[in-house]
Image (cartoon, rainbow, N blue to C red; front, side, top):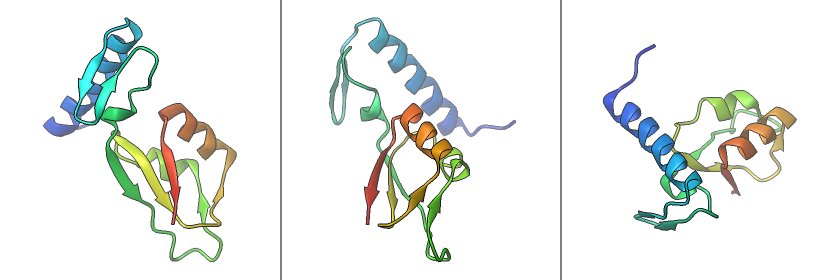
Length: 101
């Protein structure tokens, strides 16, 4: 497995901040503060649009979510998209927000 330097730094940063938040440390981010009672989504500032123009009925699957960048915090999908149960589970686990277009 090969990682770019940028991705490696991003992965380490997210893990370190998660651990600090668990320990009760308040972390200042560009988007505000991350406190012990809030999530680390402030560091997940990447927004990705999933193109489903080729689908007759758009379906968001677990594979779509697994292919997202590690720092993705917002995913834009078309209105009427069907979300599979495994995708919902992974979205909840990764604390990703959905935006309907």
